[in-house]
Length: 156
Image 1 (cartoon, rainbow, N blue to C red):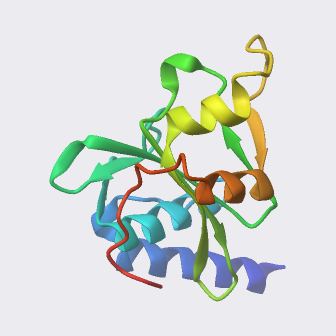
Image 2 (image 1 turned 180 degrees about the vertical axis):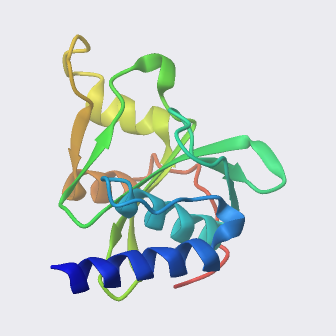
């Protein structure tokens, strides 16, 4: 396993060097997928990232600090959305990562719409965040109600 870990840590150092302007650590402790997703979205949508561990928003549209975004990335068939109404994101972008480094936009719109259409009918007194399926977010992304989005500036 030593060789495999050396390859992983070598790749992490390469990511840190190449994308140092985004101030991400690419750690293996459960944050690697999130950091990769945040950088991909930042570069594709023209965002400025806050750095590590901002609980509500991961960044904002460069030049427009009012458009704050929470980014979720996954290889799975679901995403988590906050249960804390005080931390509901202004905008929410969920992407499904592919092994080749590309991604599919699953949802791009307001956090308010996600909450109202997917979470508001669920109990608020819960221990864990809401778990939203890719299918449900895709449907919401295509709905006529989803009119306020973050513009993509670069296709991957």
